[in-house]
Image 1 (cartoon, helix red, strand yellow):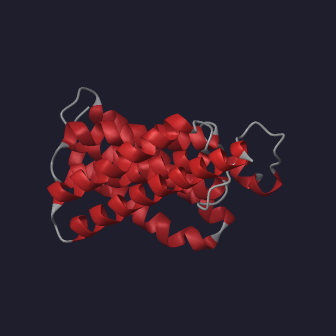
Image 2: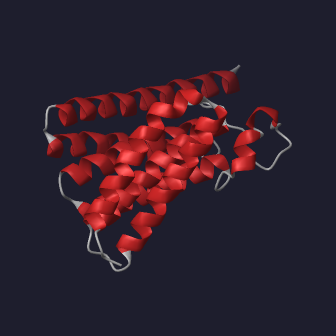
Image 3: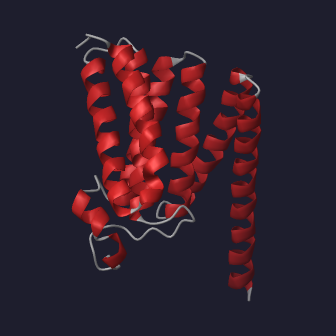
Length: 207
């Protein structure tokens, strides 16, 4: 009985931390939408600190990893808007890495096609988060790559332009494949193509 009570208390504590992280993230989004970028970054940083703590306690939790990836995606966007490009690069790279960890690496076209047939015996980690299956995560990874490409395009880091072009192209290719699977991704493909065009405009002739 004591062990059960202890585990129940732990679960309640972890849930409270998760709720607190989400509350800070929601507050950050409200600040962001009203143009208060510095406050948005501060609130979202609190959300990130909590979710990273949860990741340390439960490193095998895909739910925490998915939450971290999503919050990093927003964080990079906030930092880009605040013209804090070096920090945005760090957040965006971590975001891409988190999504790739969720999917077990780069998601190939064939893997997306076979998504409905994947079983727990396959090499991809089973994703149990509310965010959905492999194809949906592939789209989120593409979005993260596009955000990283934007941060690179706005930075002066050596070789950033070539990396930005490559990531933008990879993002478009991923959504082109997703549209083959599900026409419902059509609007996302239009959006990501517009973002890639803006990335190419930003980098211009830089190498």
